[in-house]
Each structure stands twice: as C-alpha cells, then as structure tokens.
Length: 231
Image (cartoon, rainbow, N blue to C red; front, side, top):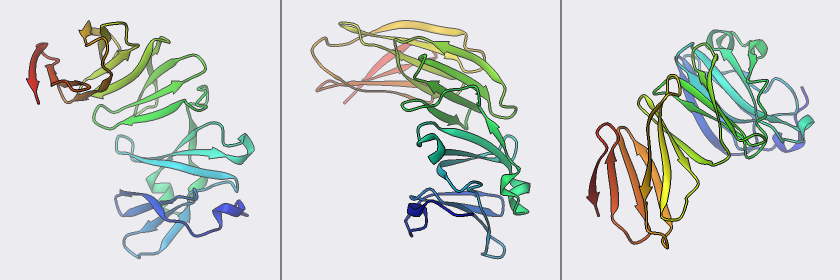
C-alpha cells in the first residue's frame, strides 16, 4: 500500500490508546499502528487504504472494539468517517475487518463525533442541518435526535445532556435532558449580566459551572437547582 507522500515522513505521536495487551499509536501525519505489549512488536497498521488519514481513536469497552475516526484524500479530507474494528481482529493483524459507522450522517466540518464513555453514548453533529444525534455505544443504534439551530453547544454528565442555547439579552436558555431518551428534565433561563461576556458554561458531574467576565463563579446543583457562589 503506497501511502500519501506526507504520511511517509516521520512525525510525532499525538495519541496513545491502550486496550488489553495492545497499544495503539497515532502519529500527527495520520498514520496509526497497533503494537503488542507482549512482544513489543508492531502488529499492523490501521490505515486500510493509502489515502486514509486517521484523526482520532477511541477504545469502546462496551463491545471490545476500536473506533477509528478518519478523513480521506478521495474526499478532499472534508468529512469524518468512522469505523469499528474488534480488538480480537486487530490482535490477529486483520485491520480491514471493521465496519463503517454513521454512514447516513454528514460529518463535514464543523460537524463532529464525540464519545461519552461514562454514559455509553456517542453524539454526532451535522452542521448541514444543525442536528445532534445520540447513539448507543454498545449496539451503535440511534436513540434520538435534536434538531435546533439555536443550540450553540452541549455538555454531558452522568445521566444527563445539557443543551446551551444562543444567548438572548440578559439570559442564556439552558435545557437538561435525560441522556437515555432525550426527555426534558429541566428547562430554564440563566440570568447573566447583559454587557459582560460568558467565559464558560461547564457541566461537572451534577454541578453546572457558569462564569462571566469579572464575576463570581456560579455553581448550580442540577439535582436540586440550588445556586452557590465561589470566587
């Protein structure tokens, strides 16, 4: 297999993933290889076509497989493509035994795919129609979709999905959903200072952290919706 010219050059390793007795190393060039921890030797390359540039890896513990996210020269590197390969197949050196995921999804930039290991979910975003879709990590079955152009960002926490909507004047609309079925658990407007930018909104376990420029950090317990302040 003749790799693309830039993939033949030595480049630094940007990602290392361990799964059982295999270590996967991804180089900045997009070349990805699997190595045996028992023999310290390379098992195989994960690039199954000459124009495949691997962008990220994820070990799926729910079905003992490796999810590979790539772009391709034949597609002008425009769209993310995902596939799942059983660890057992890779261990035997059969890198091309995987199958494609999310083929119906348009994952052109700024579209993306995100893995939620805690909840066992995968979230995709299609920028073409502003649609988020949530998939079960074990079976890759789509559970539900969210289509709303006003959603600016999402965060995941144990059992929940936080939707952050476009800021409107003196508040930011927020919605907390069940990660399992997308049902709305709480919908509310968080009041903010109109003339100050929002530094960040983060979900950390059951705590919602909201920070504005030159203001105290606000912490909201999403279970009881009680605010506290921190510097």
